[in-house]
Length: 415
Image 1: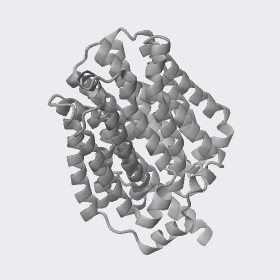
Image 2: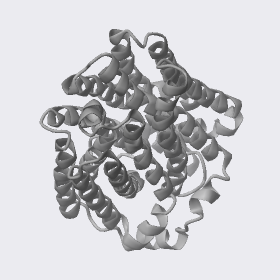
Image 3: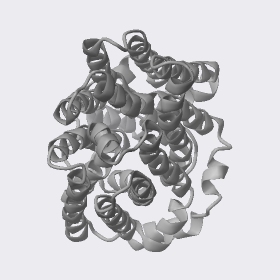
């Protein structure tokens, strides 16, 4: 009786309608909204880069440091977020990150030279590390719909934040280059109130489990698992292409093609909206049809092709704009695929896996903006796109060569 009852019960369960990804408690929505605001910082500066260059008399290399300091601090801070979170708890960790983002973004809007903003962006990156390292695991733990759909919801928030950031930067930047920084600070106050009043305190057993396991060495130990190491290194490589697109393409469109602050905002809004759309609606279908690893390689290859096209047709404004927007589709798919894969890559706690992976990927994000401009100085203005695309191809090769160490991810997701 029992041997047949279990399969029958499983079959009955599988016939039940799947829960919607949007069937979430209010605490999850509060964290998702705060995540949107936190990720605005990634693209917020894009539309105002040409304006900051003119008004602050900054070089292109100086401007790229706004992204380098932000990503470098995020990468290093990811290594200690587990230890700090074990002492503060999830809710306090999120609130601390929000406060840091609000303070440093407001201060960045109050100074008068680009190097001061670079240092303040580093503090902003610290706040983002505190928030981002905790937000995904918090959404997963509070969600009603399981890990996979929770990750997609988080990627939606990331995509919307990345897309709204340039729009906000463009619209507020039309007033002053300072306005976008103040705008983020004000929105983070709203996020602080939402998390404070809508998110419950963690249960005692969960908090105790985190305290027992948290160690500053945990992310390094996690990287001993080859699958997690491969995904982290691949993310570092493709992030070189990602930030070449995000930073250097904005400089090209602003300086070479004379797109104003509104135009840049709308271009990267289209990019971000396509990123958000594909991360929700396309990535799960690709995953079911072709598997995570194969789909990831295809999306990264297509993203590399958009960079190569921008490299060849750099002087054609229509081509650069269309390729920037199209790249959002491939990046949206890949972000969801690789985030889901990382959560299943190694038998370690999800926050630890996320911290180890994020440490490696943000290193790529720290190096890319600075060296993209240097490549243009050393070679010509086409070179950064070609080299960025080359790094993305290296990510594809790395994943393909290590397929046997990664194939368990597809089995884990199917299960």
